[in-house]
Length: 544
Image 1 (tube, rainbow, N blue to C red):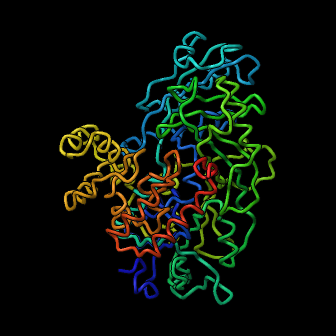
Image 2: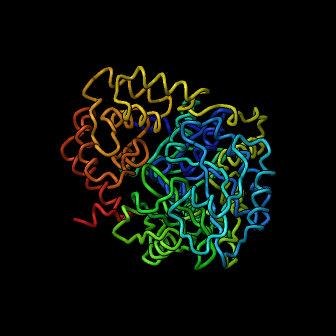
Image 3: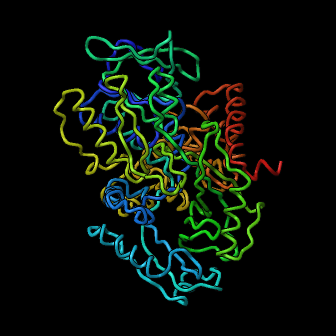
């Protein structure tokens, strides 16, 4: 069955959303749940852009207090609690230790004041309040910390979404369950001089090309939402509606390393010595995530990579606070992306607001662009956007229920579900725990494939324990179209220490046996995958 409806040219959607990152996915879910007819398009895969390159935190933004963005902090802390409720399988509490050194720009009194404000802005939170620690107490929490100059520390709680990509996927699955049409690998483009043209009913033509086949399609929508993240301005240009520049993105890069001498058991939030910016050292996915940088970016948005000076910066600052002397050889891989921040002449990257804005095009009625936003606040942004869509359509929409309705992998009492699943699955404990960590309640759906064919319980990646059923599931049930979709944004095997090199061939072989891939497609998919992950500069490819 084609992934593009045969009658696509005959349908007039209430809203067409361009961009299936976390914001576009959230908007699609909210709109579909409120009864609107929704089309979600993306030139790549679900969650394949900026969402994948985040620090993977669900946080209130402690440092935003320095810029007096109290509203943003309050919104973020409220939304953090919401995500604990609707996605407990993906969003988990994270203790964070903030060491305080002599000569730091932020002293103990400043930090204590910030922590108190942080607690006060989240009075209804489920997480513990902060604690100030003495020097000795800090060293008990993190024995690997540099001792010279250490004055004290603070410990506070935020949250981590280990696999942000899965959060996007589940929003899209929910949108589709409520009637949304979702088409990935579909590039919106100009045709016959104009992409959009208005009709008497207020609808506009949107033309797109299936990237995988080259086939062109056209459809209509009454409202167009440009949720393309850092590509927002490019989309506006492509649809023939250029306006004042909206995006002034900054680049954030991360490095991934294995365990190392002095590695912390809890996340560290550290002030860099060279530029006084805070950065994180976070236990993540059985490894450590270190980042991020914050640099103006004007290059190719489709190929963002870490630069040598960023690598040196992250290694130098990490080695300063944890005298482990990490070298480049310790880096398993890296990733980098561009934050879709609002354009400003402000030269201080850190000072650019992380608030979101919904801009209406002055040239085209019914064309909205989403600017900025955070992973943490995507749900509220989505609710606000759909409220505006309803007003522009003249519809009295029901109130949003996305804050109360759990995502597809969630269940009210997830710990109890997890224990029952592990008892009944018949799989090794490590495999069951992995399925729960990635799919939540949907792990039971993966297990149904195993029940149909026992060979699908076999592992195709020794490091992660990923099983063959997951490959089949990603294509049959979760809209994967390519090997990269499967490994990097469905099974998450592509985030192992070798970015899936080796597992890619095994997964393609599974697809050949169970999904009917030809030898030609197997070879093409593996080549395409390896070409894609080169941007991560993985050690597994450097060694070849």
